[in-house]
Image (cartoon, rainbow, N blue to C red; front, side, top):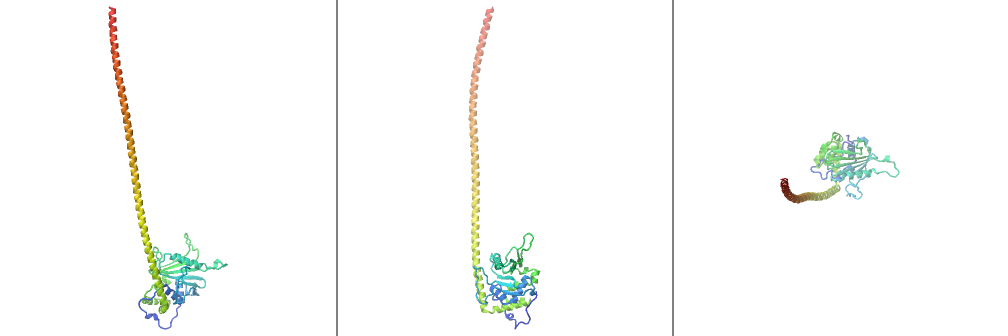
Length: 358
């Protein structure tokens, strides 16, 4: 990418005398905004890198939400106005919002979409929808937005899921992961996006000096950073921002601990519920086994009773048969006596007949 920084800057490059740790790196969003608001040339080059534009394609850049450098700012959380973002009108037609974010808010994506939507809703009554200006949100994040899909520079648009056809180029969200500079693609390096990320992440003057050697625009940026750092009022506001960030981080850590405690309590409750369910299941199985045992016992008792009844019946039948046999025996004896009597009568008659014949 070409540079528009002219040669022969006034005086010696003052930052060359600086050493050690930066008082306030560009991850401090107050310093980030101060640099881009104070040095429009740096802002222009940054936008060209991020949007892959040639310098001659940029006719104008206008910061729509400037602050008085050195004075305190307050974020209006009720109206969701983030005054330390850089709201830029490019070529009088494209709205660009540049954001430096070090805190890993879980709702960052939704928050940025909300900002995009507010910028997109820009028409006055009676204006045609074709007059809607493109809106672009570029977030420089000092955390990884999607740990499962790590990427240095990502751009998101509204597309058709099936054929990937882009619905519109007027609604764009881009993310630069300042922790993943090593993943910069060849295209990212061609547009020096990795250099800008390294500038934003630098924490020492030595790093700044090394970057300043890469291009005149980075040298210009480092010189402006040195000038801003020399301003006591700006340093005080940077300190205030860092204190604010620490306070938020403390709140977030306490929230995370509370969430972790809640999660542990939920896990303990879930384990207790699971143990209770297992106990209920064991009890239900015991009840089922008991009921089965009772059923088997009842079946055994019933079978025993049936066997008993069959035994009584057989005994009665046996007694009845014995009685019938006794009766038959008596009848047999009676028939025997009758036979004997008949035989005796026969013998008598036979003898009497013989006497009569003689």
